[in-house]
Length: 360
Image (cartoon, rainbow, N blue to C red):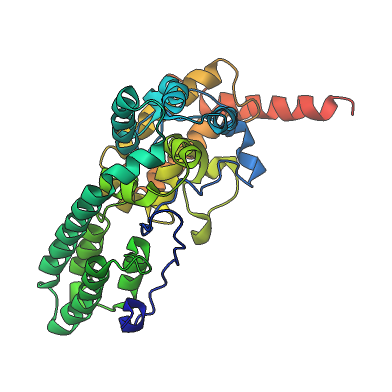
């Protein structure tokens, strides 16, 4: 019997059409390879024009979207592993932890097999990576099950049904049905905990977030991209670090499409957060308050030199919003900003007046 027929919760699975090698696709909670770094919200254009920012969530350097477009054109011309590594090397500092580790492995492989390709290398590593990935997934599911023992018998059993089905999918691995991290996380919302066990249930859901993705696990990366093209995977090594417009207060929760609600965050950090409350995101990544300060320090340095004209109040407004959305856990220091709040307000007013007085 097919695994999708077993699943009463109607898990959806990608159908994989094999080419030369039959390799199942590993799904992601975040999909940096499909995230567009061209935001549809024009209100964020002023921020997107900035360079040299670090991610306020993860802390790493970010690549501007327009710069990424130029890099991708170069990668499209690469036909061998040697050429690809040479093109990617200047941007190694922008890569995130998992992507950098994969890059280093590929770099070593390029010395031994310069005429090879990324997909050929990943296929060599695939079997070992798949085995290790299954163990990573089981370890997290074991932790989820352990926490579920603190719940009522009914809630715990509901949870065990889901984790058991996930284990079935992981073990069968029949090249058509593959374990879906995001689908599993979403399915947890179908369980209704009793009033007295909500906090324990939330702790269990937080533990489930540690299920591996291609952004957090080398093994998941290899499994996901082993049958992708050389160019697609090369771009993926950088796309996670592209600066994207992030709603501090999620749009789905009423957040405005306004620069006063925007920061720039790396594509992977932006997608991973989704509409997660900022305070909960900090629980997952405790360095966010420190990284937000680094981000704001750079914003202030750029604005002191004339960036973001007409948005002089931005540091004050975004600081207050970050504080509110984080439930007081993000408190930014703006002492290096050249404008007091009243001066910033006056500067914005002057800018608007000058724009109105200019002839069309």
